[in-house]
Length: 471
Ligand code: NAP
Image (tube, rainbow, N blue to C red):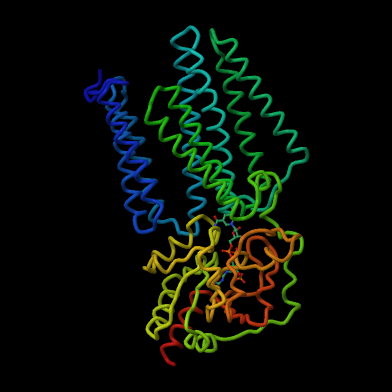
């Protein structure tokens, strides 16, 4: 028995501590549902993880403290450096990487469980073997798929969909092969072969790569969320194999929340998850792509924009991905402050998939101390639009595109949008007439009540703020 081992696996003290841990996970998730309590929620969930890890380390039978310490030190150092260095716009790939590591860890745990079972000799009980195989396959798919997602978002590999001829057939064959090999291990369980198990891991690795490679880089957030759900499920399966209740609960929470998030994102884009996975959309410009420069637009400067804004009763700011790229949140808040000083009502319209990850805009605006009550969800702000003096679209594009409503053949047909055209006037701040993520032209730019202010979002917002001050 190791010096620190004070808890018996399955004993009441260990179980009580695990219950504390996953209660903290649940409270953390609950608190994460509102920006004002999200940070605290994150700390509570992290505290829960600390309790779970500490409890597990204190279980009788855990050894090799040197290796465990080394793992903790390396992991903590990488995590700390990454969290300080990574930009908000790079958050989706960071999540992909962390998720992949989780899946990979689960696959390795499954492997070590199988080796342990083999070394003990005799048949591995099916209630251990089945979750072990599930954890190995799903964890491995998740690891490799997440790595490809990271590579695409980081542009280490081409972001456009990469298709291999006969891809679906190859994927189906790989899946069938994996299932047959798993059944074979289960049936010849008196002394399962590690060779077949390694072949399963390799096939799952290929499958993970081939499933994600054909998906366009910009669809990656949905895929990452799906892979995240897979990692959760594989961790839950590993929990069954190891008879560890904390892992079962944590894995199930990740699996279910990841699934809900995936569905929500797909719904907000009016696409099915199958469409995201198999349609190869989201990389190259889609059909009906930008042909913008041919039509005339009204172009204005910061001074004109300041005048329009300063004489409106109410202004709605519609942020999008370009605001994140430009890191314009503070400049936008400064502009809003100037308007509020003049007694103008300012609100922010938040589309559920504005930016590149769920909650992207909320996080950015919270960073600039925008009051939460000024953040209006799409369903809340749309009916208000006709009474809004000026809607200022800052670095957003697809989420305001009327084609979603008007053109049934548009790739974004049916996607709910922020209906800025309903406002009395619209100012769109972006650098050019280039399309956004969906690669399609935006009729909003050419409407009679729309004025385009071409430029970087941060620079434009600062200039407008200065001009309002001078009025
Ligand atoms: P968007 O349609 O991708 O458009 C962003 C616009 O920002 C671009 O047209 C670009 O135009 C402009 N921009 C880039 N850098 C800028 C800068 N420095 N200053 C000013 N403007 C800048 O973005 P969105 O309206 O936020 O829509 C999000 C899209 O991502 C949707 O199609 C959504 O379906 C998709 N998506 C979102 C999620 C999610 O979870 N949020 C997940 C998956 C997919 P210029 O180049 O002309 O400046």
